Amino acid sequence: MAIKGSGSPMEAVDEYFDMLIKSRFIEMFGGCKEKVPIGNICTLHSRIGWQALTKAEHMSSGDYMLITGTDFKDGQIDYSGSKFVSKERYEMDPNIIIQNGDVLVTKDGTIGKVAVVRDLPKPATLNAGIFVVRNRDDQFLTEFLQQCLLSTDFQRFIESVKRGATIVHLNQEKFLKYEIPVADPELQKQFVSFVQQVDKSKFEVVQSLLRLKSKYMRTETPSERTD
Image 1 (cartoon, rainbow, N blue to C red):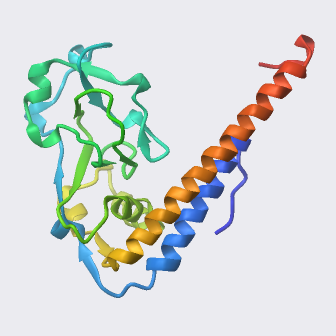
Image 2 (tube, rainbow, N blue to C red; image 1 turned 90 degrees about the vertical axis):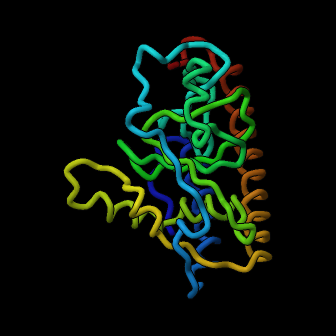
C-alpha cells in the first residue's frame, strides 16, 4: 500500500497509521479460507421508518444524546457536536440505545463509514441512517470485527453496493450476508494488541506535531502569521 498525497501533516499521519493497520490485517487474515456471514455472529438494528425524528425534535442540549452519521470521526464518535432528544424518544426503541463497544455503520448517504462507541458521556440513541452491529459470538473480538469493517475487502463490498444504484443505500439483507474471516482467537488478540500499540504511537506523533506547531506559532512574528 502506498501513501497518497496528503493535504496536511495530520492527514499524512492518519493515512500512514491507517495503512499500517490495514497492511497487518491483510498479512494476518488475508489468507483465511473459512469465512462466516456477519449475520451469523452479529445482530443489526437501526431506526425504522415510523420512528423517524424530525429536525424540530433535535435539541442543542439535554440528557439523551442522538448519534448521527456526521459524528463519525477517525473510527470513533465525536460527541462535541451531538444533538439531543427527549427521554420518550430515547426510550422508544431499546434496540438502538447505544452501549460502549457497539460498532456503528452508516447505511444512507455516505454509506460504509464505521465507528466504535467508546466513553459515552451520556445515554444515547441512533438517528436514522445508521446500523448498530453487536457481537453475539465470544469467538470474535469487537475490535477485530471493527477492523473487518474497516478493511479494503469491506470497502470493495460497499463499492459493489453503490454500483448502478440510483439511491445509495446499504441494504440490511445484503449486509447480513457479508462474510468475515474466521480467525483464531489468539491471533485476534495479537492483532488487537498491535492496533492498540499503533494508536498509542499515533497519539504520540500527533502530540509532537502539536507541540512543534505551538512552538512555531510562539516564535513567528504577527506579520508572518497567515491564520
